[in-house]
Length: 396
Ligand code: UD1
Ligand code: UDP
Image (tube, helix red, strand yellow):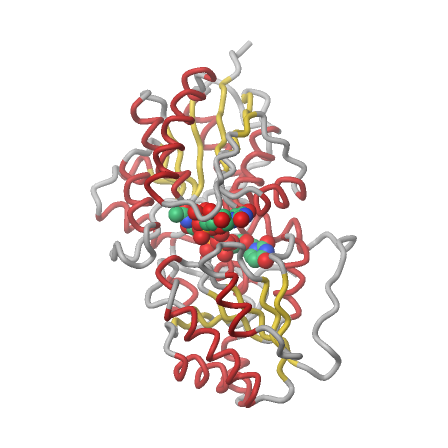
């Protein structure tokens, strides 16, 4: 009889909830694992929505979020609170996903307490600490403090190898966002959103990055207005992030236009539905850059750089930055030129095949309880399908 291994799964923000949900579900199916879910609640409402959808109730909730939280204050409060909880819970391993302040703080506290840390979505890099800020620094810190690196793609693995991370600690698993997406996209019982009007084409927009606060966000809004003015058959759906540096600006610049629908952030299932219904997506989000290609939707990235070059190289995502003229010209090309649109709307998934979480659970089993046998069907190594940059064609 094997002693149960205690795995502490950390979630802080909306994307972490989405991308950790399949990992939590997979680990809960493992007979050797005892899973504790700790929500830092760096995001409050956005995280709660997602956890509810995936039927995950946190065992511990730090309720960290404050209105318009500053990075140093957030980091300091996270480190103190996580330190206390890790001491009390004494897990055998800590897992966290991505590049938020929650993840950086969790990796640092795990390091201080000598608890092995598993980094889900390891190895993404722009090699520019200003873009995205502060996420590039967060993932470099977490990356160098991790015991297990769950890299979504072969490119991510190469980034880690270049930084001197030992090959044996890197596992190409695919990105768990595709696991979550397939789960939610397959559920036909979810409520459906109704936009756009018949005969209209929908542009879905999201923007929340710190480096876009101020003039870049104003430029993005100006571009959206121009697009709507120039294309009578276009409607925009923009679920606005609650960040106080985003919401008032967007409402001031885009409110009151009958073809621009500003709304609260959508729950994940309706947001996936909105992506499916969209003709085109404009975003500075990381997760959306991964999901939209799998759904066959062209993406224009409202950032100067991306840590997700695979879909760009595949030709289904384009980095356009925040220059309004460039956003308008690139979006107009896709609206006006059917050939250019078809070339970007191909439905490929360079980021995963839906089995990433199962692979992560199996890697942890082999590492933590090597005497046991796998409880789940073999999901195979992702290296063969993802390590060679061959995009996966998903069944939708
Ligand atoms: C954070 C992450 C970013 C991630 C994004 C996902 C950091 C530094 N940033 O950015 O990497 O891409 O989450 O969305 O870790 N707020 C609410 N309700 C919520 C969530 C946020 O009101 O449910 C407001 C609060 O005023 C909060 C502010 O938004 O203080 C900013 O939240 P924060 O997590 O610091 O930054 P995000 O821009 O959301
Ligand atoms: N998302 C959502 N509702 C929305 C906007 C986004 O559920 O109104 C989902 C989206 O599908 C993706 C994730 O949130 O899975 C991305 O989160 P976000 O853009 O906030 O963060 P990032 O991925 O940039 O870190």
